[in-house]
Image 1 (cartoon, helix red, strand yellow):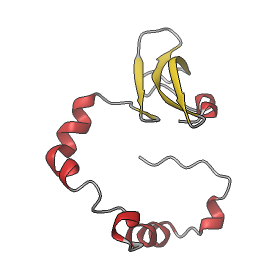
Image 2 (cartoon, rainbow, N blue to C red):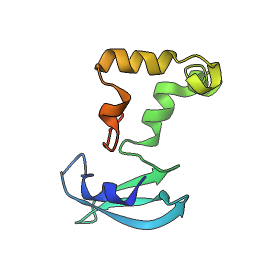
Image 3 (cartoon, rainbow, N blue to C red):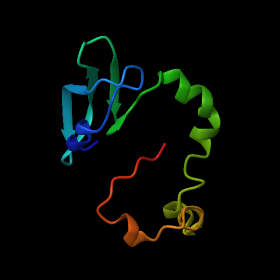
Image 4 (cartoon, rainbow, N blue to C red):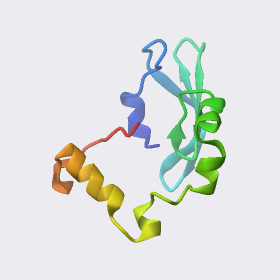
Length: 107
């Protein structure tokens, strides 16, 4: 996660700005740590440079074994075919130059 994201990220429950705590950096990004609401009542983990806004069980329960077994199936870099990239550009109608210098939230 890039440090400048702190300016735009908000607590999904309260809308409060988030404060970074116990940050560990890797390759110029926040690799792990905590995003805490200003009042200190809510905390969200940052793991592998990704803020986690739902409980761990939401990730595991939704993906579980299939995600672990087939985690590379849809990766264009693994398959050698641009299927995901082509689908993205076709579905959005954007071109790569349209996103140059932009922030994109992938959820």
